[in-house]
Image 1 (tube, rainbow, N blue to C red):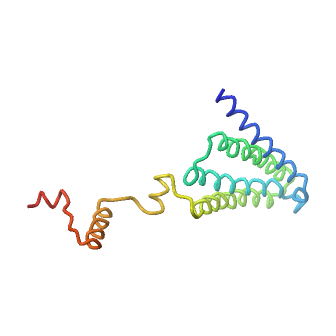
Image 2: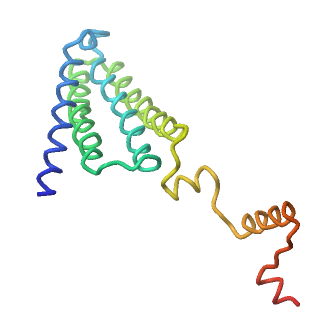
Image 3: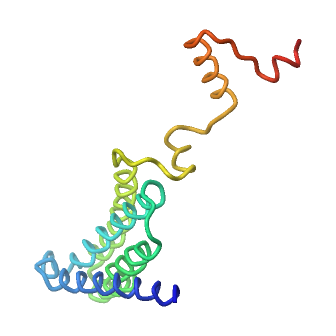
Length: 174
């Protein structure tokens, strides 16, 4: 039964993502800056941001139902963005000898899409009031906990409280 609900979650997210993609393709974006495929470009950039933001948020900050994660990351974003359309539109630009647009489309899609993923990751990590749940993310932002850091913490505590502490190493040296 759990497998069925996972498939249904992906299907539901995919339906929303596909409909939004279709809507944006038919909107004014589809006719902007012809022959440059503006609608697909905007869809892929916003999809890159969404996946970067969402997966970082639910991996590092907010525990979420795995079915919701599948619905958004696999279903919605998977149906909303598409690499195959990007490839096809690039091929059509090259066929039409629009080499400059083809080059711009490939380079900008990669560079701006990559930037959008990072923007989503950074924004998700800046969400205030939500604790970090991932040890990897915690180490990334605070640095790894090392023996020296623990010793500094113990020294600071002993200075603040007036209580001296002794480490195992101190006892061995006596």
